[in-house]
Image 1 (cartoon, rainbow, N blue to C red):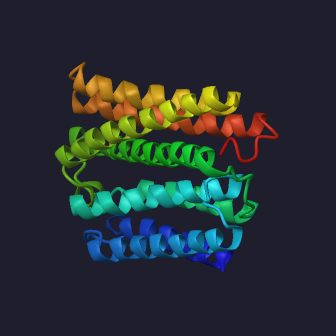
Image 2 (cartoon, rainbow, N blue to C red):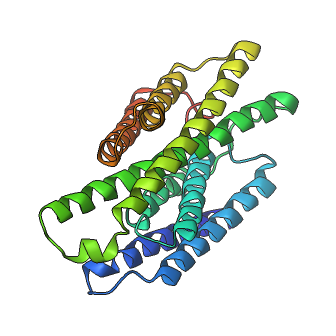
Length: 269
């Protein structure tokens, strides 16, 4: 049931991305209801798989590599669904739906093996830190995707290529607004998550260098966007460029740490 639900969610995420790319094949806009429906079905199937895991393992899917990756994919997909419903636009699915599909795929391949569960207040403390960090990374990813789409559309406009991209993408102002709000939400959530992580490490004298490096890198990246927009008065293009590049850097850092670091199951995603 758990593996089947994840495979169904994966299929819907990929289907949503393909359906969102309709304007590149046919001279029509992407079907809003179709994309949102497929994405929503994927989120529902994913949630069913996570609930089945909770029932079988007796713990939340926040520890263990497979469960953690699955939760990260679910949070990203759910965040994408909310953003697209609010914006009434599905162009972000072209980039963000595959981002949600990747950790879901890896979780399915690696297996949903639960990690060590912490009892009582310690477990709640650790779970809150992980959950807030997931939300922060998902919001950061949304900002990065919006920034990448902004740069692509802006380049098309400047080159006067009025093709499928301009029929498909939302106005630059919409992408800029999504980038702005997502960056601020990501900064707040990641900041809270890191504060809880530091307090947890001090209270229980438990540290993990790989997790500290990756968390710090992600926080610095999203903080740069938030401060740049609020304090530095960054314009849309600069914020879009910075957010897309820094999120790509965070993904590269994650892959590098996963390759180099071993024996961190349940402590580093």
